[in-house]
Image (cartoon, rainbow, N blue to C red; front, side, top):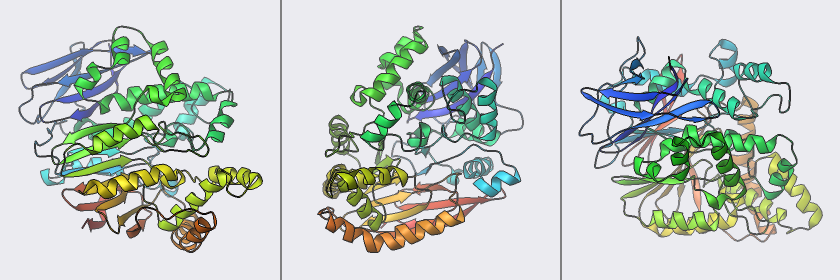
Amino acid sequence: MPALVIGPMLRHVDSSSASIWVETSEPCTVAVVAGDRTWRSPTFTVHGHHYTLVDLSDLSGNIDSYSVELDGEQVWPLDGRPPSRIRLLPAEGPRRMAFGSCRTSVPHDTAHVLTHGEDVLRAFGGRLMSAGEEEWPDLLLLLGDQVYADNPSPEMLDFIHERRSTPPENEIADYEEYCELYRQAWTEPEIRWLLSTVPTAMIFDDHDLRDDWNTSQPWREQMAQVSWWRRRVIAGLGAYWVYQHLGNLSPAERADDPLLRGLMAGDGGDALDAFAEKADAEPGSNRWSYSRDLGHTRLIMIDTRCARQLTPGDRRMLDPGEWDWLLEEMAKPADRIVIGSSIPFLLPEGVHSVQNWNEALCDGAWGKRVQRWSEKFRQAVDLEHWAAFRRSFDDLARLLARVGKPVLILSGDVHYSYVAKARTAPVWQIVCSPIRNPLSPVLRWANVLTQFGLATVVGGLLARLAGIPRPPFRWRVTEGPWFQNAVATLTFPDEATWYESSGNTLRQIDSVRLR
């Protein structure tokens, strides 16, 4: 008899439809039942794992409770949990969105709470089980590092070591291990219930593949010499497509997807592997970025990892094809634009200047010897944000400055939260990181001293010495930094709020008006 492995996960939701993703233990037909209506879809199989998305169409109102059946046997909801529900997106747009990034899936015992803090997403799910309607988000954005392929939990390491003793000994190696990594991340009761009842939109960051993924062309060349990397990147991108990307798409977009059609017809794992290998080797062959019309808001989720052009001297965060797509999306009508970028666009200004300076040195501004040293420095301290791709930073800054409407950039990655505001344009950088993976006290102070202290003094001087022009506009950090594990909400039109957890109880860190 088939069983649920992961899910149900409520993914794409609009004003008249909803999509529910599941993984099952055996091939079967998955049915979602709500009231007197039933929607069905068969599973497809990849490397011995079975998945489907069930599209609930022609909905005229919210669904207060739904169940899931596998070949006619009910497997959801779980006993002792509130019913899973579906709240359609209001035609005028969302009232509230939640967001965050960087979540490790380690145990909740005392030892791991001391090292990793509490899981705020878990506490958020527990809070919503009893919260009033006014607290519910219409959408949850997960902005990168949903899983840590390069730093697995103790349970995940046990799974790896029981399978093999080959490199990489303490990292994910293949598709089977990615499947287990996602299973451990998404099946805790509170997390599982939360994901079954709040729609999610996701984008990757480096740890979904590996720390510093696509930092630079030398990084790619170095990793190409590592014996296990090719298998890892194929597995990582293939698993991301199945577990995260598919649910980002609307039913119409999925209906036009040739890979999904092939998998539903039985093409299996070879087709997915070939797709993933090409997506890594030829980023223009596929688009991970996507957008959604949310009534008053246009949501644009940007791929800032796979779509990079890494050519020394002509680095771009978004290659030309991706940039043209972004221009088209930015031009579409909306009262405001929300951009999901896993890595922040507006860093503290001093750090921005240091990254500008390092990129110039990596391109040979101070000679070959300094160039080699600068590349090592770039990789060692993660100088690979938008500021380290200065051409793309300037292009996007000019674009945002002339849009003429509010632009809110939601990001994670840096393991602290803050707000930055452009001085001459309605552009805000809003960061929430981490959900569960805090910096140590020593590293927190190091970040304050370097990024908000030393870099502020030194960064501008270094940039000028390297002959780097000033950015198209100035900005400043107006709130933060906060270093706690956190989840944030964006309440439209203009309020951002951060929450931490204490004893699995959610409590507010701060709230900011974006004016």
